[in-house]
Amino acid sequence: MANVLAFAESRAGALRKVALEAVTAARALADTAGGGEVHAIVAGAPGIAGEAPRLGAHGADRVVAVEHAAFANYDPESIAATVAERAKSGGYRAIIFSASAQGRDLAPRVAAKLGVGMLSDVISLEVSGDAIVAKHPAYANKVIATVAVTGSPAIVSLRPNAFTPVENARAGTVESAQPAADPGASRVVVRETIKGSSTRPDLTEAPVIVSGGRGLKAPENFKLVEELAEAFGNAAVGCTRAVTDDGWRPHSDQIGQTGRVVSPQLYVAVGISGAIQHLAGMRTSGTIVAINKDREAPIFKVADYGIVGDALQIVPALTKAVREARRHG
Amino acid sequence: MKIAVCIKRVPDMEARFRIASSGASVDEAGLKYDMGDFDGYAVEAALQITEKQGGEVVAISLGPAVVQETLRKALSMGVARAVQLEAAAIPFDGFAIARALAAELKDGGYDLIMFGKVALDSANGVVGAMTAELLGLPVVTACSKLDVAGGRGTARRELEGGAELVEFPLPAVVTIDEGIARPRYPALKGIMAAKKKPLEVKPAQLGEQRATIKSMELPAERPPGRIIGEGTDAIPELVRLLQNEAKVL
Image 1 (cartoon, rainbow over the protein chains, first blue to last red):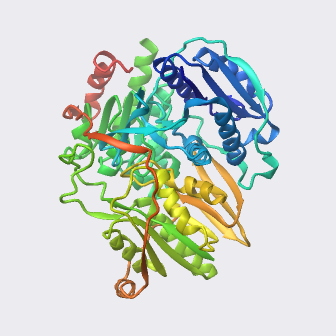
Image 2: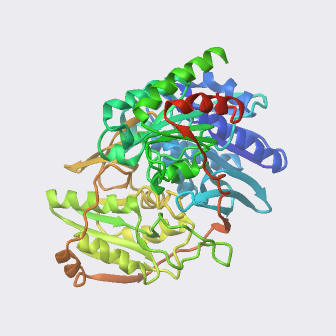
Image 3: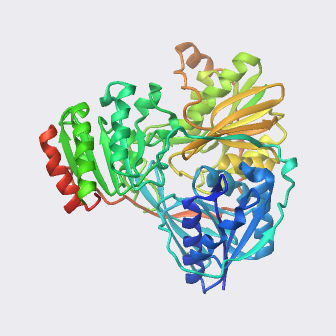
């Protein structure tokens, strides 16, 4: 019997999808480790406890709701202290985070507070004897390492989108808790959370990504990429490093070795040559479509479906065809 | 300002990696090494701060004697002095590395301790935050913008679909994301000067390692790419394949 604690990430009063991924993975780990309980801890402004039913639906036996007005923005110090205190009192075998921007910040803080080892950015997870064993992409995603951590609790962060949320209803009994450290005493203060200008879904969560490179020739031509993303319904928009270096798009949109690593069901590369730097961030996508004028471009070596030609002509026509197909499909 | 930058020697990620005969590491033959991409941004950001505000930058790297090459590179960029924390190998366990770094940093009198946000070989991205916790210092991770003045810092962190603006007091630890500053290439003068700059070697106090690599494998290759046509004429076929073969439309 071993209980597992999942950190349920939220932003602006709502759970993020990665919270459900963490709870799902925690449920699977608890079940294989002898059927312990899953506790999900969620921190936010008053009202966040209202998200508890969704955590219960994905396998949380208990939901620890830490509500505080100061948690309207992420409070790394107070939340890390609160998770660590809960971990000390709970006798958990493991604490599961997402390797999201917030989880990557929080998980190592908690591990160091508890003086325990951790595994980062894993794509699978299991208990093996006295160790937790996981697969972890390393070397710019070119190597898959099997890694292990001993000691309890083991801290683990999950690669976003690598674990699919599964409904597995449990009680989700809500337990209110106070922050273990006064948010007013936090040294690191998030003054503002800026919402991206795009209304599109996030790159790490989107099932479809349309991505543009220098082949689009000018920043204003990204509207063609936006329109194609719109045609797919819920696609996110990404780009290459060359494009962010030129200031056409924000760094947060960059897919690649030094940017986001994504793995959507469908990845459409528009005017992207396929530099190693870029391929490192998208080669595990389900289906890859490439549109590029250079037949020899390396992107065609990984593209399931390649079209040779001028992106500026092909993309608008493809947008129309995708709209048609979705209307009739 | 006294700034420490902790850097790691990593292989060039453009390489085609092979698994060593041990099955638990990459084959080092033929690999080129440099400081990590994000470490380069951190060194550059540190140099820009001290160039404006005065002070010195100290580079620290943990590992065997070869990490001295990486430290010399930092010295040639303009770092004042360097410290090698000597270890037979660079461990996978980020907490072990953090313990060794914290032991070195704790009485150093640094106003700012900087890291790259992640080293792409082990790809853990935990050492900066863990080191800060061990030192009891505030930490801001993955900063894409950073300003320090008057004993305080402000930073921007990129989020999924957004960003955070963060304030913090110094001394502090920050880890650096892309976008902050493009690393300079060392000039010949800098390379010559680097040879004479102090590089101290001390033993690393690593302690127990709980996170380890058991084995490594190369990911499954994608099926070879396929060009289905040219120009807008290929669009009907693409839509058909997306609907009927890939079933994603």
